[in-house]
Length: 101
Image (cartoon, rainbow, N blue to C red; front, side, top):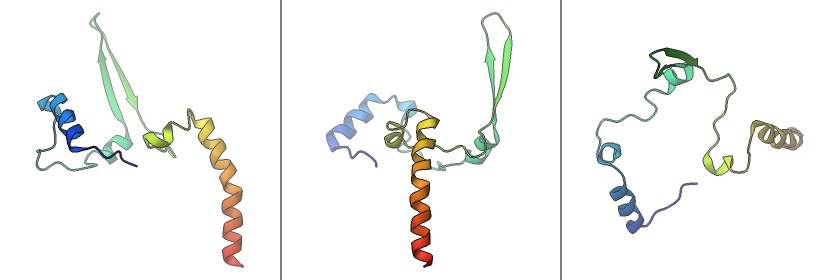
């Protein structure tokens, strides 16, 4: 659920945002353009002050789920999410059986 901002709040947000981060008037932007590539994985190079470089490759595990911020505040970790979902599974099974009968 998105928070609805008043006109006054919208103006304040725009004034506080540096011009280089204001994408409101940007044309040609595509939502999700790099989604598939990101899901395949990405490499990060970390250049340290001693001159060495560390390379790390990150991938998203199969089955990974992204929680929206409003949901995330109720589930501090994956154990909490799994516990809640396990409690829902029996309810879902009962509901399916009722539809079949």
